[in-house]
Amino acid sequence: MALNIAMIFELGPNDEGSIGGGVELHALNLAKELVKMGHEVTYITGAVPDSRKEISLEGVKIKRIEFGKTISRTYDPQQLSFSRQFSFLLKSIFSKSKQSKKETFDICHGHIYSAGIVAKIIARRNKAKAVNTIHGSYYKYWNQIVSSKLKASFYRKMERFLAPRLVRKSAVQIHTDYDFAETVKAWVRPRFKNRIITILNGVDTKKFSLDVNPNPAISKEVGPIVMTSRRLVAKNGVIFLVQGFKEVIQNHPDAVLVIIGDGPERERIQDEIQKLNLSSNIRMIGMIPNDEIPSYLVKADVIAVPSIVEASSISVLEAMAMKKPVVASDIPGIREITKFGENCVLVPPMKPSDLADGISELLESRKRREELGERGYNEVIENYTWEKKAKEIELLYYNIIDGHLPEQG
Image (cartoon, rainbow, N blue to C red; front, side, top):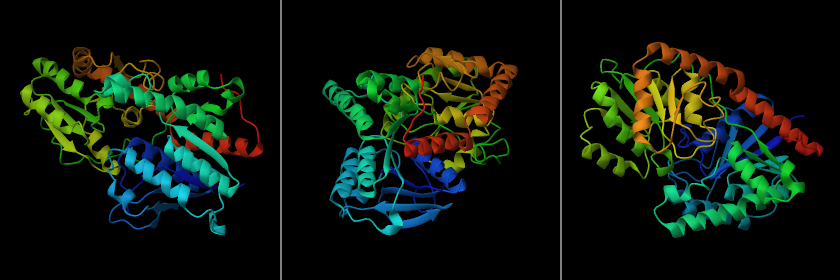
């Protein structure tokens, strides 16, 4: 049975299909795979400046909503702002309740919190089933990634309120990591626990493949290349990678760190590079479209993912899909997809010296790099392709419609 699905998230692709962050990448990849499987999918997102109200991308209908001019004004592909979430929610609340016959959805699937509420609103109007995906959480880490204790307390309280509420209001709440899923299970009554399901992230193995042409912007004539592709926000820990790289070049003076991405931490990171006199060894590429990232990764000798907190890390999966050895933080969300360090080098988070040791270990052993690259690649092909993940979620949709859910341990 073909389904009509609304995929809902405040950030989405521009008219060229360019994506900024991991959540919208997840939502769009899932939507594309569901279309290939014969379903009809509408990606409902916020307005993007200089982009059309409706387009089609690989069979996915992209529908952008506006609320005055407030939603387009808040567009930042690197960061989902509170004002954009709030405007998106208000538009959904105050929009006309009558739906076009062409927009009768069976499943309304919202990502994170406010889009999860919107999914419930649209589902109620369509007599459809609401699904909510939580893409990890900063609940245990807010004090480490924001400077204000007041803000940290507020964010913790909001997550503590919203996550269990959305479990009660949705047919299912999907988590992309086990750690926060177990936390939320402890917050809800026993009869709601089976609504909390964990399905880890996937990766586009056709895009992040072994047959990628290298980007000429990165010269392989330089020394060994360490690379990271991250939004430059505090939770991604790039500042610790920069600090650790000072120690890496003591043993590998010709090594180069390539940082792909942009965000509010950019200036702080640039200042740290200047302070440590690393300008000749670190290149900041800025934000590039996700489609172009593989052409950079193919040049890397080592991929570093120095996050403080992650769901099932898309960056790690992308690196493994290209047989690249990974040094990453030993945290939930990375442990699971790397089989607790079998497929990569895990190091304590926020420890520049340990990160440097892990990178140096790989730079010094080609055999070790190749071994980890092979293991990671096999793990991705076996368990983390988007084809496999979309089938898991499709089965979940059918179970929801049929009125029963599988038990999870």
